[in-house]
Image 1: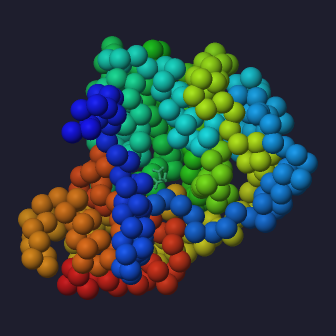
Image 2: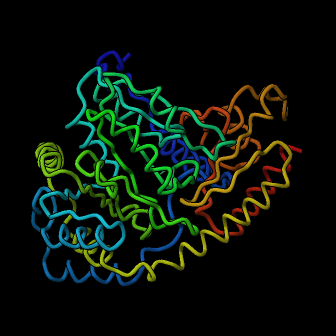
Image 3: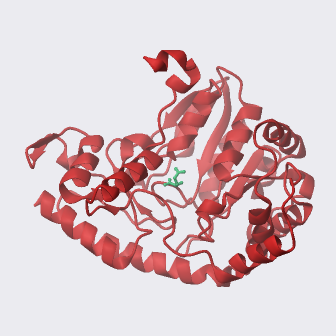
Length: 396
Ligand code: GLU
């Protein structure tokens, strides 16, 4: 009833499935259920001490006022240093905008570039909020499918075939959430060769999982000369620095896009949290070696999870080289009855795991990959072992 009073905009917006599943897991836990949540992509580490100390110092130094809308200049300079150091990208501070998480960075970019009716290409699987953010801009999202057999990568000819005169943007994400796939420099260049023929298309390159890679160092779209003026590079601190709740995301972009994002942000949230920004200066300038222990741990867990899931019939796996997710194809279970439930799709399968195994995952439907489910291995070894043991029991 009250929904009729809400705008069409919010009524047509899907709930974020990652957040919804995490909330459901929390709710069930609070009700006394022994739930293991492998739903949310959130490092289970604490923020490193050297970053926490920088935040405490900022509080003691009375950083408490509004910040510039696009971020402290020292932080923007530090981000430029980081882009040069890690990505060989040359940005000046007027090309940087700091936001309240990479999610806001992406929403800003979409809001300032997309008109109703524009088409946004989403190589699938894609992060749940991309499609919702495009929809909020009244743009049409166009999925480019991939499967586990091609390591969840799209090809240049698929890209070419998806482009129409209305295509305005592509949202590209490597290392990928949910698949963990990392595109090689060669693969980036092959996709860029297609985009070169279509100068009206802008590239949003979401590199938030950059540092969580197991050997294949990720590349950046903007590092290709012909793409630099058309690419918005998105990054943030949440994943690599275990700072999800601090909410610091940022973009490097052509100055005119950065200026437009600042204008947008100035009317919605203003500059992001002052303490988090001061701590972020320390974080982005820190040598990667300072966070390597988390990446090493994630790799061990990935290997263990792949070994354990590999013992369950019906789980089709590939080797994800980055991020902290596995994204098995579980379509072998479709059409079966398990624990008295008909499993028709990934939603049913994910609910089966939640309600019968007490393990929270996220359905692949939410990521545009209806044959798969996502499990986050950003959880302790003992939780992961127990979760997979329970899954195996339910399915046997
Ligand atoms: N990006 C994380 C995930 O995919 C955090 C939740 C969200 O914002 O979607 O689980």
